[in-house]
Length: 148
Image 1 (tube, rainbow, N blue to C red):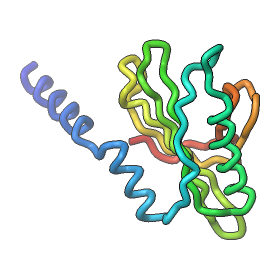
Image 2: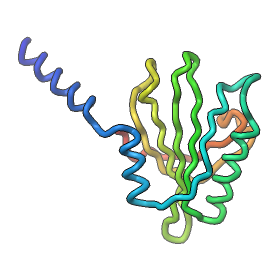
Image 3: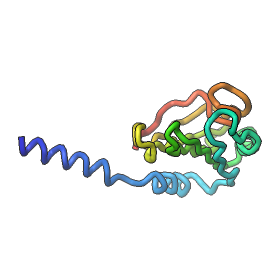
């Protein structure tokens, strides 16, 4: 029993001591940048108080970067029902004859979420009133690459 508890404690200490989300993002910037900045938007939860105009402006910038294959970054922060922030950081990355969209999703501040950082490679950018984007922007057709 004691040996099991020691092993379990060691496992938790390894996962808790991994790189921070900001470190992971900075490593990505260092490896694939420099990136132009479309900005960051925190439009709130979907509903009456949602700041659509700012979210659409940041999304339009990201869409233009994708269309012109310009290395660019944009951030979207939305609160959970409890108010914990979920952060999506999008990168347009020139790759070969086209561009990739890479989306990082940071749920490490969500008390009831998976508490992880994921990275996905996506086929493009969606801007507008699509159900999944809660008027604003998102990436489409994403495939998971890594989970931190």
